[in-house]
Length: 222
Image (tube, rainbow, N blue to C red; front, side, top):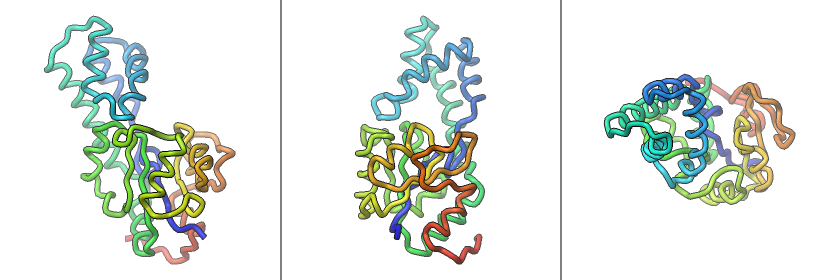
């Protein structure tokens, strides 16, 4: 019997970043979106492990590309990113709040595990989901990320539950489901546009699909 559930954040509980945000950031810098993404994506691992802020990434990008650098421009582009982060966190998957509330009422410990940059960790408390979680682990705060098995074991340890008694729920990005399985957890893939991943023991159409896996038969949306 499973004793706890760990959730991914973006693509699972909240929507992913929209591609248009990178177009807007590139336009403000006056460069093609493809060039912007080439440099931005390269700095993503450093940001997600807390080694660099998104302002640092933007400053470094401008220096490498020889773009006119001003604090005002950096702040304007950073504001676009921050706005999109707020919007993504506010756009929860249908049923997310109700399912989390159901688990809370059933006294099932919940964890959050996200490959996230510092602004996500900063804004997380304001999204209204945090009260449901006993343990929250952001990669930028612990210096490691999915799919490293150690980060899964870390969140399980904070929950006080052995990995073999814990579900991990995600959309499958960053090889997260493979990492969870390697750490000894049971992987659950929630439907998105991604293909089904063999390491996922369960495949669910919606978050409500978790309820029978946990043996919960009573569900009353708030």
